Image (cartoon, rainbow, N blue to C red; front, side, top):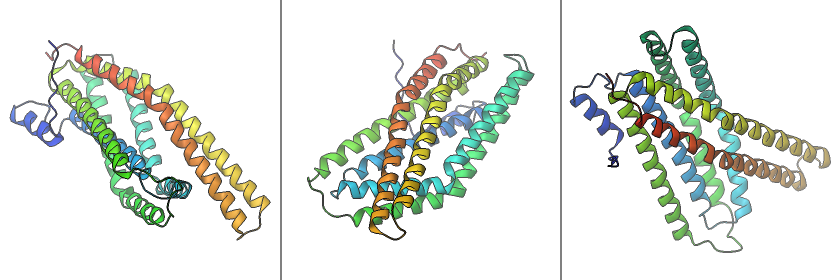
Length: 286
């Protein structure tokens, strides 16, 4: 019989784990790692929702695209993505060090990886606190920019567009909750060594896609910078032609990065699904 995964909020699940007297309560490194994954997943849903909702503005599309490009540059400037990447790289290196030092299934390896996960959770949490205000300002600036855009050539059915964005947002959050519930079950009830191997396999699965995404985004940025330099070479400083040329280069760069993330999405989703299947197949904790 198929297992039905109840869609409870994060706090409810954690409270339940404590109420049941499990050893993997809130302070557990395993639970903290699961919570970190959950928060990252939800943040991605929010970002996708905001991007989708942007397209629903009944404003001139090229103008809104320029505003989105400026918001993308603003986000880059906050440093939050670089901070997250540094946290993840440190975690990957620490986990590999644990695997190199201690045999598979040993308590020493488990403790070592648990400690690395706690450090990574704290690292990501610190990054959110440090760069969150700047990121919110980027979003506020975008709204001001977009509202100043003129009407579109072809009117947008804003109500239907927003409803579709909301439906996709709900689906995304539901998937995050299911992933989190699987992770909590793994922390509370599944063989730890098996679960850790599932995590390692998930990282191995994701790495080629993440490497390709990083390379694609770097190529987009390099092309954008080259195009902007061409604009500066072609047109005098302060002229409308230079401003328009640079705007076009920034929009093209933004759309290029956006497409790179879209291209990476199916591969990352496949790895998430494989992880869920792997964890569910792990034997009960002894």
